Image 1 (cartoon, rainbow, N blue to C red):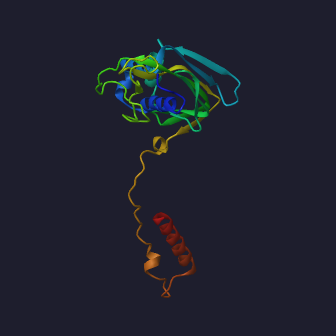
Image 2: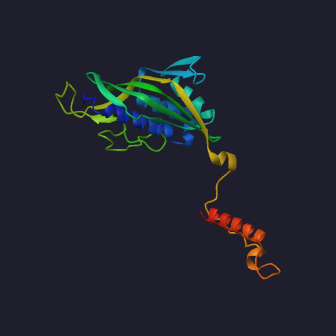
Length: 249
């Protein structure tokens, strides 16, 4: 099997995040999630979540989701108003665990949920993913119906996670054998969370056109009865000029 531990597992994890981030209408179909989980998870894999009721860590709610129910779990999440999810893996590291088995660890991962109503919820905590090499028979190219790799061909030596074998005699693999990187264990502990709301959801879409200037007051175009502006008029004119400068800025 091809070697792991040099970033291949991390790239595969980013490909999975790219599929979660898509806003395709097909994500409301169970078949889309079935294909995604079949491509990225082994049949015995388990996704473990730990969610805290609040940032005070007073009450935890753990989840252990097996592959048979994972597609429906993600489908229900989408149907509840989540339009996209993304994984941010700043400082992630990959290490070799065994032959054909690597571990990707990130102590400060962020799992971001974006909702249709404008809210964004960011879960923060450690992430640990076990990535294993599985032998597969390459399928013919798929159409647009199923999930695809956001990195595309050549993304770090991966094309949809498929790594070509080294040829006959390499680790006992036959010539032309292909391998697929899959997750065997996926654990994320959300220690903290942040919640935001988009400004457009409160105030509506913002205009990008230049601000229109108001016509100058009459006091700037004509003086008082003595032929010049009074003290009060000079103060009003100065305030008006300040407003114009602020609008132009």
